[in-house]
Image (cartoon, rainbow, N blue to C red; front, top):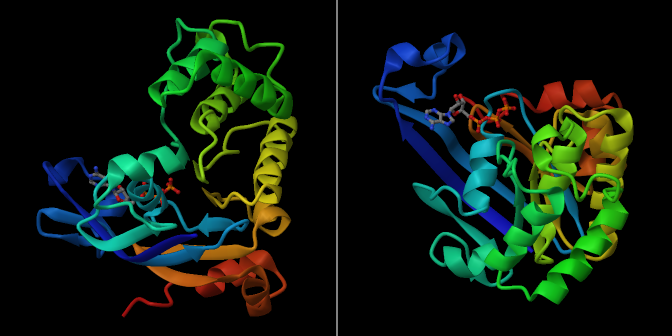
Length: 259
Ligand SMILES: Nc1ncnc2c1ncn2[C@@H]1O[C@H](COP(=O)(O)OP(=O)(O)OP(=O)(O)O)[C@@H](O)[C@H]1O
């Protein structure tokens, strides 16, 4: 079970002139600080898939980076099972598989070597790593490119390798930042099937997306973040009860907590 409560994170703005036009007008900009995440709370039970929605710049990636221990929150709590992620990040990291939107692969290494490297970082034995790579490569349909250098991989090949790398150590929870963005229909389907398989194994998955169809296909639970605030956190049926039209339901969740 993953529980996030009242999470907040601000960044110091070194050069306000370099902010995007959107960020300059954002009410989260207060003096020299941009309050990317102001108050985010959500829950994801065992075997649940949680879809994290929100407009561009809402604070989804910042939230997921805090959940993955890559960023330390200014306040709030993150608990995975009985581990306090904020105060015990090293223990928590072993439990988490995190796909970030921006993690690059080592181009000179093959797909397999990229994944092996992460397995070793997680103290896995060579035989355990290789068995796990075989398993994941079957699921993500990677065998045709697994032993090629990753520098010339397509977006889909890169994403599959990054996902494989994130879950090589069989984490207890999986966090995926926009896992299907930029993928063609077939690669996206493979990734969706992979998430569904994690769900059947009882592994909670939190993923951010802009694709509402993925949410209805996969998610038990939906959280919406807008301007750094949780504006909806409930079941898929509570979400669709707002409106049977998903876009309309999403629009209705925005601006709810803002005064
Ligand atoms: N290091 C930083 N310094 C200053 N501002 C930041 C920093 N990181 C993120 N932000 C700002 O915080 C806000 C939230 O960013 P974040 O990447 O979490 O949004 P997002 O919901 O993931 O957006 P998208 O859907 O576009 O990926 C944005 O306005 C962004 O410009």
